[in-house]
Image (cartoon, rainbow, N blue to C red; front, side):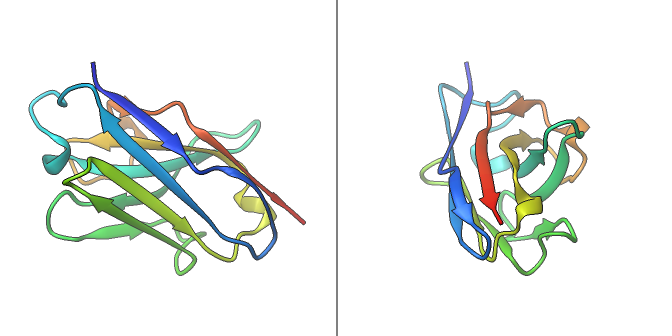
Length: 127
């Protein structure tokens, strides 16, 4: 059974940086592999819906970001290691949320398109 496990969350001050990691293990995705799936990051703040943060295409290097993190966050992936990363710079209190990695067979920012999800890692940015 495929598992996605995030790590790297924590408490950081405003203006600080964190790097989140997500490793995929335990098998292959339905109809594909890590190397043929888009990998995305989403976040959910308390009492709010889960929102798109960033997505990485499986092969052509394409990435896309939510407007709120554009220029501050960078998504990357290592297909040889089945890992995806989210480097976060200049963090703000409004970035506080649980961050989830997810896998989708299509390049999309819509969480509905992601059948595979991790359990999340907490990021807290203090003011």
